[in-house]
Image (cartoon, rainbow, N blue to C red; front, side, top):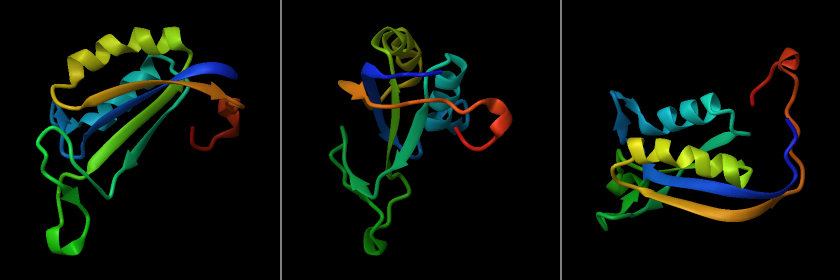
Length: 118
């Protein structure tokens, strides 16, 4: 698949311990994005942050948190991202979903026979 030009970045901010049916919520979001055929998804683990609870979560040793912030980032064409949003409505009870217009300079998927990640 090739994706260049105008696109939308979907970023989902959740907690590392958030769950969907006994498995990490971020894992379920990535699995559903993959099943929906979206261009790609990445999960980024934060080292510090706070959200709706206003409680600061950090990886500093003196106040080590077991619920660090996580961001799931997905980029694809706007219509495909918007079609995916109802799935997030089903999954997310607490978190933040952000849509940003972006421009993709280059994205080219590797043929499955070449292996590797992505």
